[in-house]
Length: 135
Image 1 (cartoon, helix red, strand yellow):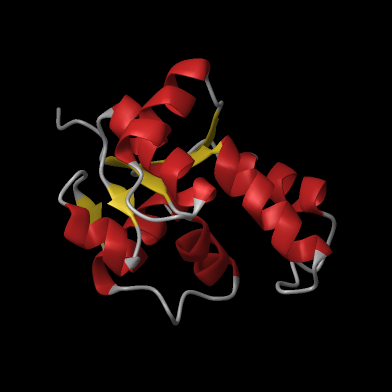
Image 2: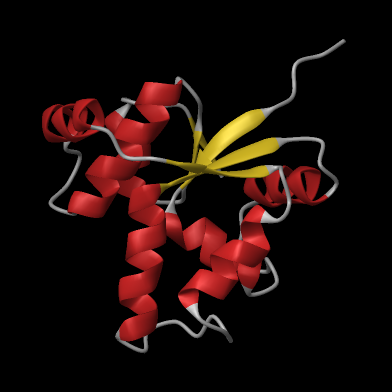
């Protein structure tokens, strides 16, 4: 039996998916579709949850419900798994910094920790060569 495909999400792909997926890259969209069928796994780092909360509070995104309800709904599908932040990830994030965004550093550290590809269109992360990237 084949291993279930798994990846880690950056913040923008998750928000693009929640908005209908039109802005997702082909491979990222295919991964989200597989998750919806429960044929793949997607880890959601704690940093993504926090960044979504900050974006919603600032009015930059509209989740159409509370942040808690948004993530409760997401995690009701077992294909989506929260990934807790650890002290080790914080240290890895400091070592891997690909740009000045602390959220990007923590999200990259989560993907590194899990040894999984990262769903992202972020050019700086993609060009760093530090992670496998899916878009």
